[in-house]
Image (cartoon, rainbow, N blue to C red; front, side, top):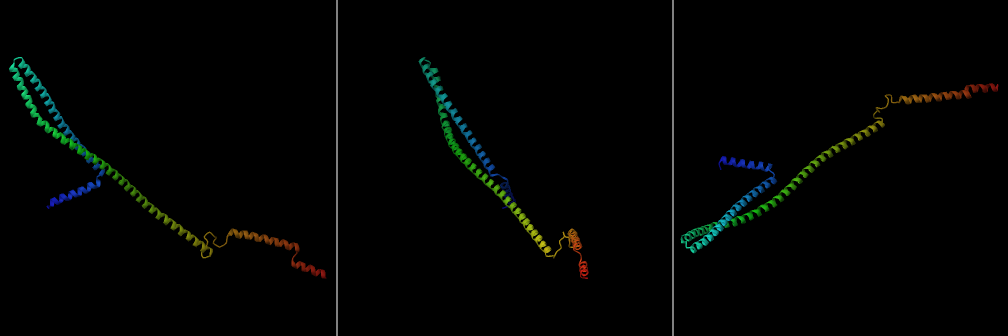
Length: 247
């Protein structure tokens, strides 16, 4: 095999692959069906032409036969009138008409045979075209259904992949939330144990407002104690009064 032949073969293979990728089988089937319809129309036109030719010969045959009958009658009339010359002329024309009739017969028979063959061929081709059309529509329906299923499968696959990504994101969010909760609980436990200082508490470890309230409460107790001492007297005053009574 020459290099040029190999290159040509390789080119055809590559071209066929490109066509296979880009062509729609339904369009190819419709085109093939259209071509078959065109061929069927050509056969029918041929059949119509043959039938027309046969009809034309039959019409000529009928006209020649009518002419032969008329010439026969004219020859008889000429003989009755003693005109043998006219009778001879009429008979001569009649013989020519009959000869033409005989010449038309094989043409008619041939055209009739061709018409019969074309009729049978047309019927067979018509049946094939109808069968192809039925098969074509079945294949197209199957291909359309398969194409729809493929699109649905691709969509489902895309949704599944997207849901998988969403699931991973949700899992990461849940893990991070659980981690933050665990960290917060650990910090609370450390603060409660005194290991860590509460950032919300004052620097001295005591609430200033609470200290002021305690001071106020403490001052109130001291005042009450002073009043009580004043009402009952101090222990020193009571002892002095007792000594004065004994003396």
